[in-house]
Image (cartoon, rainbow, N blue to C red):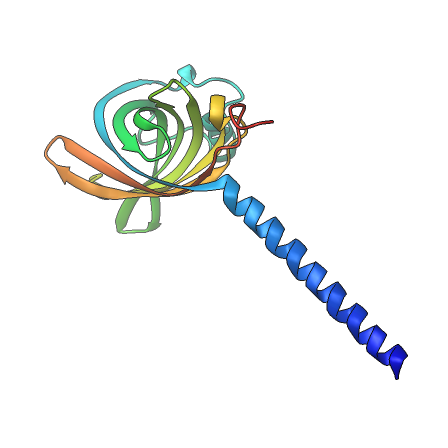
Length: 190
């Protein structure tokens, strides 16, 4: 009988240890992740030639996969001014490609892909790749932004943000960011 009780104690103790290790690992991952919330207002857009895309970049891999965009054969350079909870004021520099999508013909929409650099108030940068969709007249766009790296406290950062329209009126276009980011870069390393 005593052997059975000892076996049960060992099983219970082992189970508690496993639960404790699991909780500690979840908690350490959660500590590295921070909510990313913010907004950005587009302040400029200019267009360039496709040959301005840097070889080996994310947009270069999009062209390798999908071919060059036919109906809008340019790269769009867009600059946004924003505010977010992980870096304060920020400048978002985007390079974008737009592909006309006929999959729901006669309804047409645009698929877009972007390389984005977010520079926060202290100069640290967040590097982001973007995949999104706009209706044909660009009056409604959504995207998923994936954090792929950064500098300073965002070195080796990861994350994901959903981007939706906040306000579009005339020339004023505001987008809203909602997601998460890790900030375990050089400023946080031991």
